[in-house]
Amino acid sequence: MEVLKLDILKNIKSTEKFKDKIDKDNLPKHIAIIMDGNGRWAKKRFLPRTAGHREGVKRVMDIVEECGNLGINHLTLYAFSTENWSRPKEEIDYLMKLLVEFLKSKLKQIHKNNVKINILGDLSRLDRSITNEIENAIELTRNNSKLELNIALNYGGRDEIINGIKSLYKDLMVGNVSLKEIDEDSFKDYLYTKKQPDPDIVIRTSGEKRLSNFLNYQIAYSEFFFVDENWPEFYTNNLHRVIYEYQNRVRRFGGI
Image 1 (cartoon, rainbow, N blue to C red):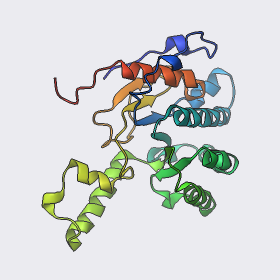
Image 2 (image 1 turned 90 degrees about the vertical axis):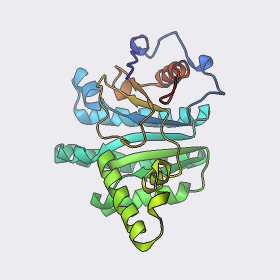
Image 3 (image 1 turned 30 degrees about the vertical axis):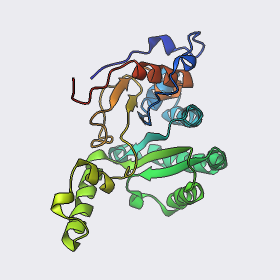
Image 4 (image 1 turned 180 degrees about the vertical axis):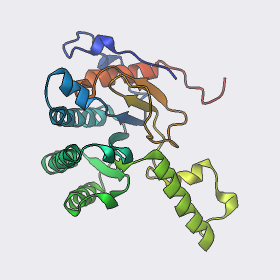
């Protein structure tokens, strides 16, 4: 597992730019990001954790728009995990409030940019006021085609696999699928990301080097980039640097 250090990009004013170095004919089809470090960003500035979350939302729009501009087809953002429910209730409530604010304030812009919103995860635990906004966003953008934005919300990779197995079992029992038809590719139809390519790139910000139950099935052959910047510090030039580095790696998929 390779580790990419982005020390050169810690300052937004860095003079080295990578966008012009990107090969537009060799773009990743799917980028997945673990948006980590909002709290640490705030702590370094003697601010409450909520300030870090709010700043992090700004980076979401920056990265979504830049992925669309570059021609990336799929972007998955890890917004809230099944394990995040163990956080203080006040912080959880604030995160959900930010999600609703984001959808209300940015949905028109997202729709105008031809971005389709998908949700990966179990929404049954969320308040109805939140799921109403989510359902509205999904419905409004359902026919958009420039970029598919997956928001992983109340998501866990193991939970996704278990739910997929349960759905597959039901189809086996009623004869919708036979045992002989089941393989690695067909099982993908039982995951939240069905019909989408697996992530080419997985990025985790904040310097942590773990995957935290994220897309466990889909990332078997993804390229991993663990960057030092906290999520509020991850600007578009950082994204360009990752893509440039990705294009200079050799992907063998188990071959020679």
